[in-house]
Length: 544
Image (cartoon, rainbow, N blue to C red; front, side, top):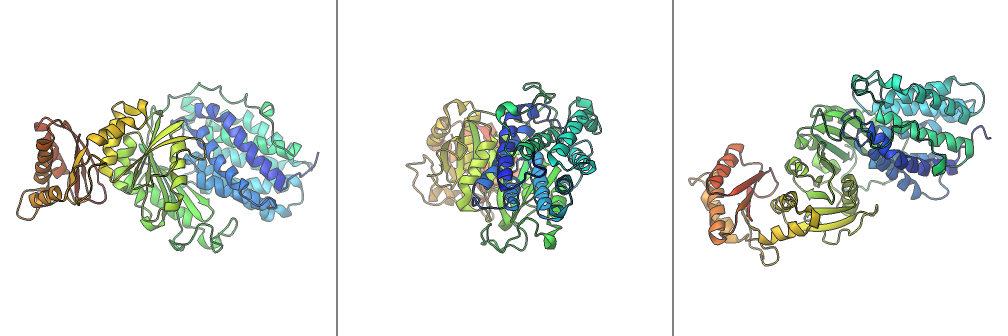
């Protein structure tokens, strides 16, 4: 047995082995997830996070050093991080990589070197959240590091194995320090996930390879299907999860993420407060805040009741990726992903059951495949309908993770909303077919409609309709609400079979205007769905 059998091959084995172990433990860890919200997805989030880390390692040159491998694992995991647990794990990996490459590499004994890396990892994980709580993964990370530091003898693997045994034995006691875990009589799911990752590390240190499936010890975790709280039940705090991947302030918008001028792992002295600044901004609009250093980028997480406010904490030009989902909705199959340019529509689409990708001016268009693939994975479905505003028709048809995509490109948020409503009405069993049928029946107009072909889309968006609507709502004429009602009545006169109306308003259309229009149209016997605010037209109306 080697006292310190840690090299690049061992680091690669740890990356792949941790992913395999996390996937094997996923359902067991999901079962105890009640903090920060009981949405039963910590195991899933950690597995997806580690998948990003392992993928980044696989892209490395075969000659990469152990520091390079661990840095890539941290970068990839932090960028792919899902949920609060993924952000914290990404930061833990960041600190671990720094510890191996920093002062810890000059420690006198192998256990001291390991303890130094584990200590920096625990510190980095705690810095990921503005309100660290005892009794969670943060406590367990510190306890493991301290136990390894107190160990005697030259064997790092033995020191870690003993520390992990003590951590598992005391996990219930540690978790009881947090009232929500004590009341639910469960252990912290994030702590369980970290211990699984550390078990793999101990095996690699001892054997020089990752454990085989039959060597994984998961018996100490709860059995699958024994969730303490049904998925989504009792969710407190913000109803929506918002995850933002952003550029730092000093990075030019058009500079590639992998530009050599960017900071790399361990080279962050000049921007040490960036994570805190983003975390504090997110904390003003929600809870369960966590922020990770993702290499050249920052990855922020928040639960909020106002996704648009969370999306607005960072200038649009700095946002590389923004994903919004509703926390209290059960998974559906097929899943639904919506790509929209409108931050104000994120809550509406997410409430309709979509994992929503918000594409601002800073979004990397060439990376849309990756963004849609991430959102598709977040649906936890084998097949996904993708309703995309102005997305390339050639996207898909299968993601890198093997999820089948049914792509439905649409010209605007109004059409996307109609497609979502068709899927909500029970059409998901047939994939995107129900949405396509609804769009074929759709007749639409807006305040800024321009002359365009309607043969292929089934939409009646003509220059004449837009001119009439502007005239109806112009200076000295009727209100915006009256203009909308008049436009919809014209559509219905030409298409008397229409029964359902979808209204979208822009940022300049007040709630009173919208409510007045809805009341008038409901008096006409129409079913009305209202959404907004959307970018583009001041208002949009569609009749189905």
